[in-house]
Image (cartoon, rainbow, N blue to C red; front, side, top):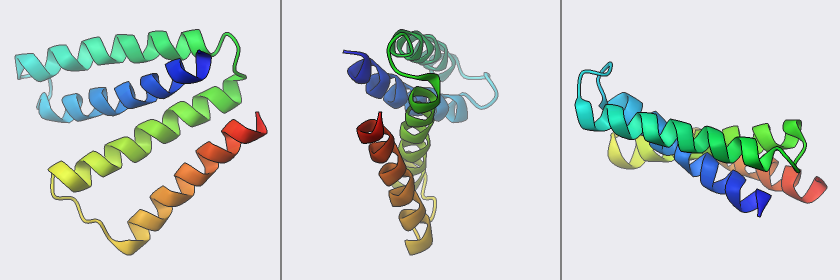
Length: 104
């Protein structure tokens, strides 16, 4: 259950990062509210997961999911470049996250 909470929390990190960008410095209400709710839920899930998953592993997985998700969102929805080099770097992050799961 801790791993499920960790993955969901990582996805929520992507949500709050995207909402933060869309809030335009907290000048837009709906994205600002989505940011706050997603942030609290993401931290709560991370906290729950870290009860049983070592902090180094848990935090790295959480950040990795959030980083890859946010970068993918930027490329898919915001027109950021999806170069071969960027995609290979994201694959490397995913490989590291998967490796941490299996080495746990």
